[in-house]
Length: 139
Image (cartoon, rainbow, N blue to C red; front, side, top):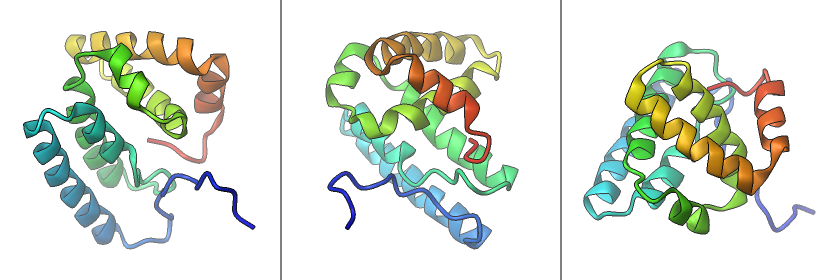
């Protein structure tokens, strides 16, 4: 029987790439609406949900990164974010933080480091290790 904590709704590798892109575009519109309503944490949750982790298509990964990046950069109260963000999002968020740090873009890196610090305090070092060790589910 399934546990009460459902697994995050990650996309499957064999899903049609155009369907993935379409879903990301829909997600982007929803995030923009949430950001206009001053709901950045809800926007981040929406951005992280359904991330195409198992696909190897870089176009899908880049499109989803843009959506996650948009939501991450809107977060102003990092402490407040973790009061509302469920632990099921921690590992996937850590993966996107490392993607953000790899850009070398100063504002992105600054935001990623702020969130990384608080996420590590909240989730512990295991979150970092799971993120780095998982080479199948990539962002």
